[in-house]
Amino acid sequence: MKIAVLKEKGDETRVAAIPETVKKLAALGPGIAIEQGAGESANISDAAYEEAGATVAQRADVLKDADVVLSVQGPDAGDLAGTKAGAVLVGALDPVRRSDAVRAYADAGLEAMAMEWMPRITRAQSMDILSSQSNLAGYKAVIDAASEYGRVFPMMMTAAGTVSPARVFIMGVGVAGLQAIATAKRLGAQVSATDVRSATKEQIRSLGAKPIFVDQVEGIEGEGEGGYAGETSEEYKKAQAELVNEHIGKQDIVITTALIPGRPAPRLINDAQIRSMREGSVIYDLAAEAGGNVEGTEPGTTVIRHGVKIVGPVQPARALAADAGALFSRNLFNFLAAFWDSESNRFVFPDDDEIVAGVRLTKDGKVVHDRLLENA
Image 1: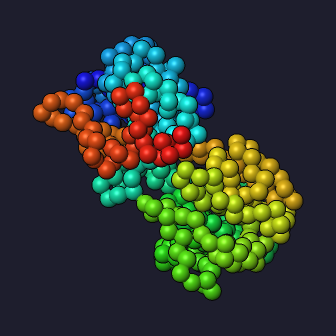
Image 2: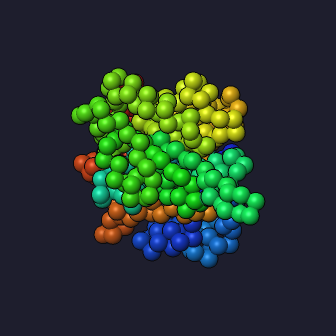
Image 3: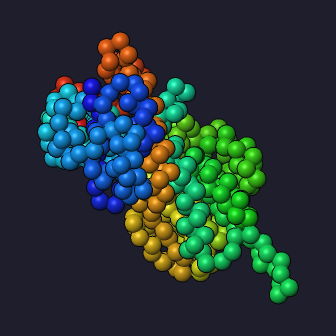
């Protein structure tokens, strides 16, 4: 049994295994092969992997006879040339936007597992890459927004006068939003937050922030499947827009985090609302890659609209490569360890397991996931 770990392409700085998880995987029984330079961007040397018990080699040798291939971002099928049929590919495979790649995995006989589709169940919490990476993204959003803002966050009382605290508004209180609230509070900002899920009110208050919620529209919780936000009614959207219109013009920094799995990001901020903010304010759109929560967001760049900076980050956790890679690789280890069969010394992924059914995209040369078949 052999596990291969690939070096990522392009701007990806994270790595799918760190020395800690290499040791743990090796202790289960499999051999571990790491592509040369895989950990460079996360400050992990080839020697550190070898000390942990892995072999380090060129990609062709790493993939040869591999039973499991680990990656962060899903590789193209061509990058997996030489991988045997039946091998399991595990990573963040972006199945909806990379449907052609998923089809190519099937054609190559690979069993592809998309970790971002991990079910939100108790047993899978330690395997949830979206939560681990979103936590870091929420932190990074505040740090980056503070840098773009160009003013101090906390109130300062000096002999020359008092500096008012920054006013930060978080839209979307999932994992990223909660971490953004906590980080902004630590920096001394005056923080408020909103979400379509009424259950998040107490979470917001528990972090010392002010909840901004629609109260006059009853019976609309905005709860989707698996703990994600879902679609809301037109009545709610109108009431929410009116509330945000009143609140947003008073804010210095707005961080948006709203995502609905498998759909374009919901529009939270329009041009008129941007215009209502004072010049020099900052909007940080964590949903930029999914179409953006903010009108005018451009992924991977910062634009200025009506004097307001709109930041559209791409995978902000990448900027925290060491920590992000460590959390990601632990998620992968926890997933693999749950399906290691010590008697047969191999990984066994039962068809009737809820986790396997949630993440498995391809098997036996076919695309098998219901969500992909529905959109075929």
